[in-house]
Length: 234
Image (cartoon, rainbow, N blue to C red; front, side):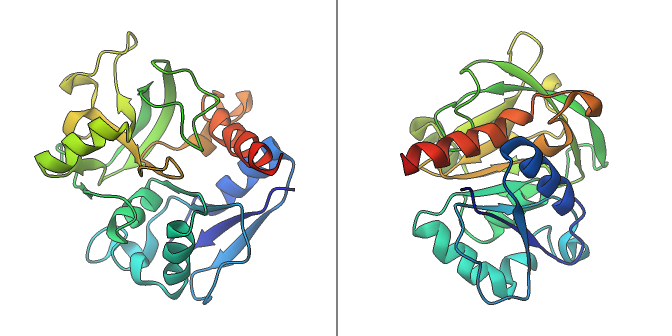
């Protein structure tokens, strides 16, 4: 049995996309949990979906990070429940302190919506074990604030801990400024915490989980969830 809770904020618009992808790939139902609730039901995984929570007022994810539900999300995450934050969900993870750094305006100051190439730097996390280290995959992005920033010391710690999970790259896996759609430091597209159980990424795996959507490279995020949960239960 896989128990997944998808948190829904005012302005979320990828919540049902994630639910559909999770259910199609894992075969188990996903629960939608409203941001105003005081607690998350017992869950094997919690997902913070993409969208524009609270209209992106103040800063992206800043208001959502203080939603009633987030007190319990943070508590459960710190107690070991895996949490996946996609796009706006990544921003919320940073704003809530579960991941370091911040997502700033794209260097172009423009909303970017297109496919990008990503190099898998860490395939040992809860959400990436079905990928190969060094593999180049394709996923879509859709954001105006995906420019990852942290101070030099934090960036060095992320590198040393293996917490940089995905980087923007070219087809050969070269991480260059030209490959980044948003100016993110060190080409960072996704990071995890030291345990590998909290992952934030700007690309949208739920938008490429089956061939009918134009690609399947996102599917293995959800396959990794199922494999990880079943392995823990074995």
